Image (tube, rainbow over all chains, first blue to last red; front, side, top):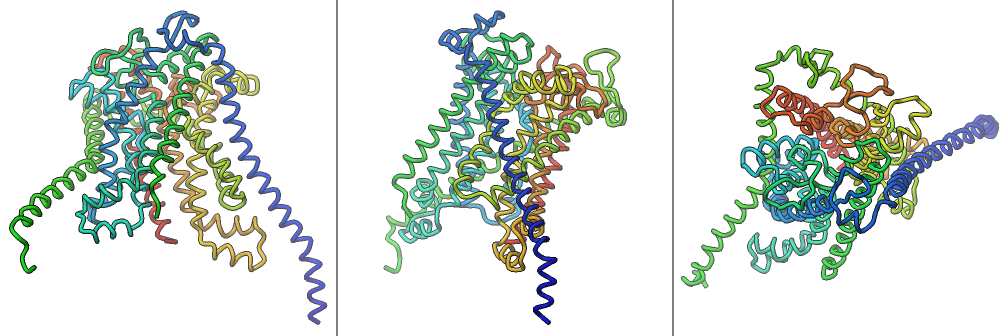
Length: 298
Length: 305
C-alpha cells in the first residue's frame, strides 16, 4: 500500500519539483541581471566622462584659470581650493572625531545622555548635506564672521563628515579585543593610559582609513559649499582665511550647466581630476592601513 | 606596605585630576553632535518664523503655485514637494528591485570570490560624487537615451530619478544584505530539511525574517533620495510645476535652495527667507524617515542578537 501511495506522490511530485527548480533558476537569472545592470551603469558613466573629458585634459588645463572661452579655461584655483579644503577638513575633523569615538566607545556608561549622543550621531548622518550648508552659512559665515572663505567651507564640511568619522572610529575601537584593555589595566594603567597606549594604536588602521575615506568624500561634496560661498568664477588662487574661493565640484556644476559641447568637455575633464584625487586618497588609505597594521597581532 | 609613602600619593592625585580633565574633553567632542543638531534646528526655526511673518502658514502648506522669482510671488510649497516625491519615487522604482536582487544574490547565492569582487563595485557607486551623476544625466542619459525614446526635454524628472536611483541602490543593497546575513543559519537549514528548494528558502524564510531590515534600508534610501541635491539640480531643471508626468521638468526642494543661493538674492529678501522655510520642510521629512528607519533597525537587531 505504501508503495502505491509513493508512486502516486511521485507522479505529482516530480513535475512540481522541476517547476520549483525552474522558478529558482529564473530568479537567480534576475539577480545576475540586476548585478549586470549596476556594473553596466558604472561602466557607462565612466566611459562617458572619459570620452568627453580626456581630450581636454593637459597641463595647461591643470595650471590655467577659468575663462569664458572653454579652450583657454583651466582649473588651478579650483584645484588649489579643493586641496586646501580637504586638508583643513582632515586636520580639524581628525582630533574631534577620534575624541568623540573614544568617549562613546571607551568611557560612556549606558546612561540616558550617552544614548542620546549615540542616537543623535546616527540621525546626523542622515541629514541632507545641503542643510549643513545652510547651518554653515548662519554659523561660520555670518555669526562667527569668517565670511565666504575656505575656512567657512572646511568647517561646514567638518560638521558634515564628523558622524561618518565617528561611526568608523567606533567600529575600529570595538574591534580591539577586551584582552588588550584588561592587560593594560593589569599593568596598572589608568583609563587614559590604557586608551592611549593600547587601544588607539590597535584601532589606528581602522581610524585612519575612516578619516582618509571621509576626506575623499569631502572632495566630491558640492551642495553645502554653494551656500557657504564657493563662488563659480574665480581666477585667482584662494587664501585660506580671506576672500573668495571655488572648488572642483562647483567648477563642474558651473560648466556642466551650460549646453555647449566644449563646456561639457571641460566639465568632464574636471570630473576626471576629482576622480583621480579620490583614487589617490583611496590608495593612500590602503597604504596607511597596511603600514599601521604591521605591528598589530592578537 | 599599609600606607603609600607621601611622595607617591602626591603623584597619584594630579594624575587623577588629569584623567578627569581628559574625560571631560572627550565628552565635549562627543557632545558637539548634539550642539550641531540643536544649532541646525534653531537656525532653520528662526528664519522660518521670520518667513511666516510675511507669508500665511496655511497658504504655504496648501498652495499649489510656487513663484519665488517672478511677480506675483506665490508661496505654495506643494509643487516643490510633489517634484521632490516624484524624483524620489522614480529613484525607488529603480533602486528597490535592483538593490534587493543584488542583496539577495550577495547574501545567499554568490561565492566568496564573486562577493569580494561585486561588493567593492557597489561601494564605488555609493562613493561617486553626486555632481558626477548629475553630469551623466544631463550629458548622456537625457540626450542619448531618454530624448529619442520618450521625447523628453533637456530637463526632466525621469533622468533625475534614474540617477538618484543608481545612487541609492547601494544603500538598499548593503543594508538588506546585512539583514539577510543576520538571519540565523538554523532557519535556512530547517527549511532545507523540509525539502524546500534554494529559491523557496530565500523567498519564504530568509526574506520574511529579514523584512524589517529590508524595510529600514528602503526608508533610508527614500530619505537620501529626498535630500539629494546635485544629481537633481542639473537633471530636473528649475520649473516648479504640479505634475506627476516624469517627462516634465520639475523643481525639487533641494534644487530650489540651490537656485536661490546661487543668484544675487539679498539675504534680507523674502526669497532668501523662503529658502529656510523650504529647508525646514526638507529637514522634517528626512528626519522623520531617518528616525523611523533607525527604530526599525534597532528592533530588528534585538530579534536575533
